[in-house]
Image (tube, rainbow, N blue to C red; front, side, top):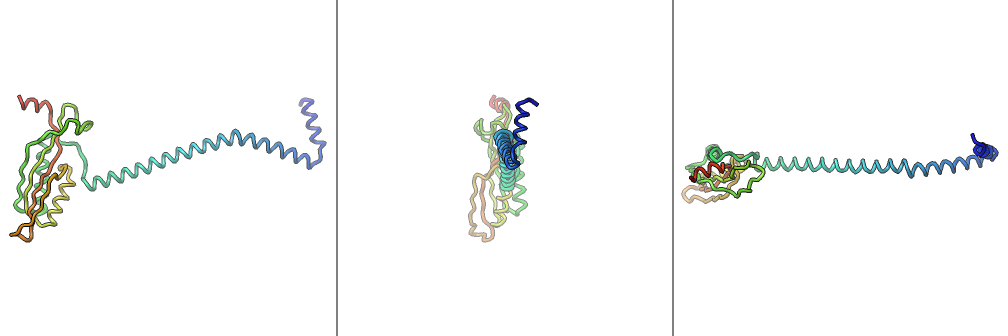
Length: 204
C-alpha cells in the first residue's frame, strides 16, 4: 500500500465511529450512482429492447391467429380454393357439380346448356398460372323447378363447390300453375386455363 493510501486509512480509522459510517454512506452512494449510470442503465436498455421484441412477437401471433380465422371463415363461406383446371376438365367438373346438386335437392325438369369458353385478360391470374397458359372462363345456363328451400340448398352447394367460381345470374319466378315449386334460371361459371400454343394451332 502506498504512503498516501496508508495515510487515508489512518485518517479514516482516527475518525469517530459516526463519521466513519457517514464516509461509508457517501462512498456507497457514489458507487450506486456509477452503477446506475452504466451497468443498470444498460440492463434497462436491454430489458426495454426485450419488451419491444416480445410485443412484436405477440402482435405477429395475434395477426397470424386473425389471418387463420379469416381464412377458415372464407373457406367455410366460399368452399375450398384450388388451381384452375384445364379447359375440358374444368367444363366437365362444372357440369358435374351442377347436375349433382340438382339431383341431390330434387330439382325438376333440369336443363344444363354449356357455353363456349371466353378468354379472360392475360394478367387475371398472373402468378397463379404458368407462362404460356391463357386464363379463360367456362359457363353454363341452368333451368329447373324446385321448392324454395331446395333452391336455397342448390345455390348454397354450388357457391361452396370448388368446381364453381360464381353464379353470375340467378332468376327465381313463381309458377302460376304450380304453387309448390318455383322456376329458376341461373348462369354458373368456372375459371379454367388454356394452352396458348393450342389456341394458336386451333386458328391455323
